[in-house]
Amino acid sequence: MPRFFIAGTNIMGGMAIMRGRDAEHVRVLRMRPGEDMIICDGKGTDYKCRLVKADKDQVEAEVIEVVPCPAEPTVSVTVLCGLPKGDKTDYIIQKCVEAGAGRILFFNCDRCIAKPDEPRKKVERWQRIAEEAAKQSGRGIIPEVDWCGEYVEALNVAMSHELPILMYEKGDREALNAVIDGGKDAKTVALITGPEGGFAEYEADMAKVCGIHVCSMGERILRCETAPVVGVTAVMYATGNLS
Amino acid sequence: MPRFFIAGTNIMGGMAIMRGRDAEHVRVLRMRPGEDMIICDGKGTDYKCRLVKADKDQVEAEVIEVVPCPAEPTVSVTVLCGLPKGDKTDYIIQKCVEAGAGRILFFNCDRCIAKPDEPRKKVERWQRIAEEAAKQSGRGIIPEVDWCGEYVEALNVAMSHELPILMYEKGDREALNAVIDGGKDAKTVALITGPEGGFAEYEADMAKVCGIHVCSMGERILRCETAPVVGVTAVMYATGNLS
Image (tube, rainbow over all chains, first blue to last red; front, side, top):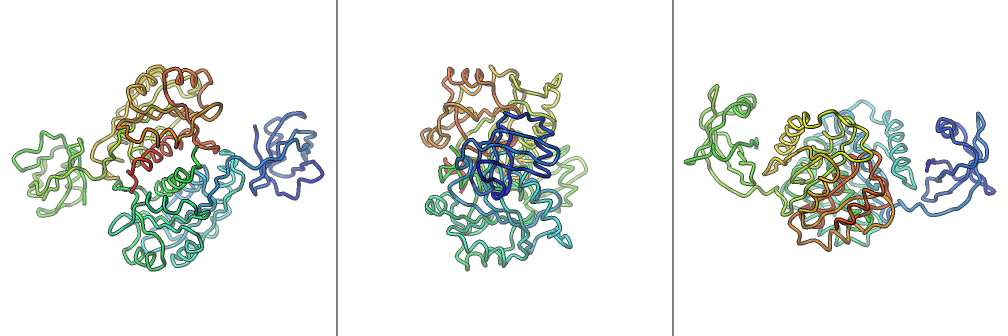
């Protein structure tokens, strides 16, 4: 069934009103009055609707049923990634949204090779990728994607979560599954992953000092664009959100 | 440390001999006598070696230490994928090898959109992608990639594993984590995933008749190239191979 996101305020009195890009999309799909669609408020609630009218500028649909979006995980995972090169950001966003991430933030650290002048300029495009992936995978929210500045800021964000984890590929680390299983009741999880060159040792030490769990993800070395989706999947699996 | 795969027969008498493409690679890396490398026999054993001589045609290295490759998971996972369009195969191969898959097979089924005349022609290229990913991620084997023909053949292959699972996105299914946790002692797992359009209902029914667990992966709809890596990650997590 076609799936759209609209702002909650456009659903009122048992009717959903769509304009702009989404209304255009309904026309492109050649939907006819009487056909069903799901309109999501982007806050985890799905409105099952029946199309009433599709005009040039506006689409009207009758609300048939209101349900919590079944695809939203019970745990909110924030993914924090050292900014990788090129379009790996796009891949990370798409796959993490599919896997169930609640928010995706990129930051700058010691070994970030790509330092675009203004990563903030990319945020709008990143957000569109998240929206597309959220629609396609049936999510009940559009995960926020943003640039969060320097590594210290990423640590600060992570520390505001009940279970903050940093993935690191060497040295003295905790086992990922012990940490996740030990924090199974956490409702908020942060996963920090590095750029192509990984983290510098002092960066891993900083995380430890902040009380962040520095974890191994097994002995296989994961690419910087693979580690985030593997991490989100591990959390979803452990918290019963993969079944 | 640089990592190479060579056939086991080229390691003898405490010396490792490399020729051809790998010898070329050693020269490209400008390695000097006295530098260390890991040469893997592709069967799960790592030979830590010290470079003795790098001639135009041949590289000789002294074997310092022989250890089981620490990156090899304790469970052997065969991934079976309905052939997707375009270069999604490459992505599936690369990510599944990183995640720890032991073998990757593609097959043809009802909703496969891409039906290249001879997918067998692609096997050699697929295998090179697996080799690259195995080197990069530190694997102890080069997972086999192959074309396995029709869906019925994929079911047959899956049934030769202790824990055969088919991922399906609707209807009456078992929970993936219950099935994996219930089969934790299995040493061989098969994961069957569909092409872009998923499986036809009769195909899921066929799998059930064969005794294959038909499983849900949560309510989020995963792209055909995302489901295999998510499945492999779930198995690795559950069997303690992600820590």
